[in-house]
Length: 420
Image (cartoon, rainbow, N blue to C red; front, side, top):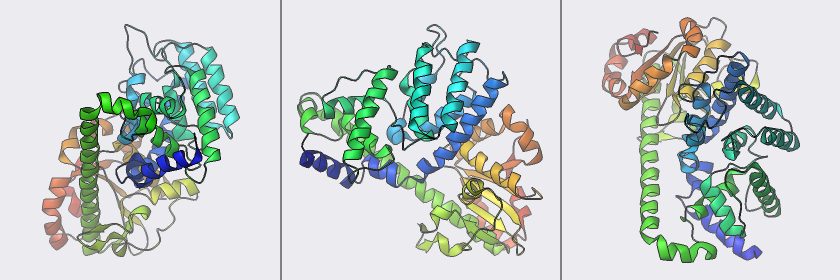
């Protein structure tokens, strides 16, 4: 392929405001949060397999939490969980009932989690492939991407289709060998055209995804789009546009809740911290960062944990910089990731007395309760309980709480807590 042709294709991809490059890679803070959630979740999967508490089904398992966090990156990974569903009749993927396969999977994940270079991961992929575990194919590469985004590209049907279309290849689904062949070409192109892409393979993979679903038309797929996909392409464009609008609506609600939480906190006498990456966002013309203190007091000596805590949506502190309340505003993203950040904070501060809250849409109340009732969370929640407040309740009662509240106890009337 001529340089000028590829450059034109990438330019169109990057300039499209509704491409996954813009809606998922660049402007989606939930993508960044997912890395922490997935890494932490993988550690739990490994621990449960090693302790023989993993269970024999995908549903309700720690692996479901990990893969759900991936699938929630719906711009590229919608449907990513399907490959991991336990299909009893087919006995695939055979990592739920076969103990040796389960151990091999845990060993693979542990080695990849701690790998310092790509060669170590490739070695582990080849070792796993030799095990011939039924149904455990390169869909696992989606996990690898979130562990090592600068080493391994993600993998799904659309990405493979886009790869084959753009580079005139015949890579097959379901084969680790084919995945590694595809990866080798992606690495080669990514290095040759680094000025167009990124060290993170999410950028080039997003391009292949757009070509694979026919949303971005190039010479190699133009005829097929014309012959078969006019109606499908229009439907796809409408779906993406609706998705973008829905994301904007969710983002607006998220900003609104952060604003109301900051307003309430300040009205009842607390200093307020707004998530580090949200300082420039606005609600009704008010810049959220203007409601926030400039620097978050140190809660942890561990840099990674402190960074995670700084991403908590809203934190209330008293005049002595003690953490009084911490709030995670959930939209369509993983509730587990919010719980994880609150847990990091609670286990980091000395007295562990900070009040923890999830703020979420009413339609997610059942999901919140299900997450908070997870048996694996009960030991932590007994010592550091997490309450939840619905958007509707908080929105309707915020003004009254601002007027009559004196401290964090004002939330007791609207907050709910789950009992195991």
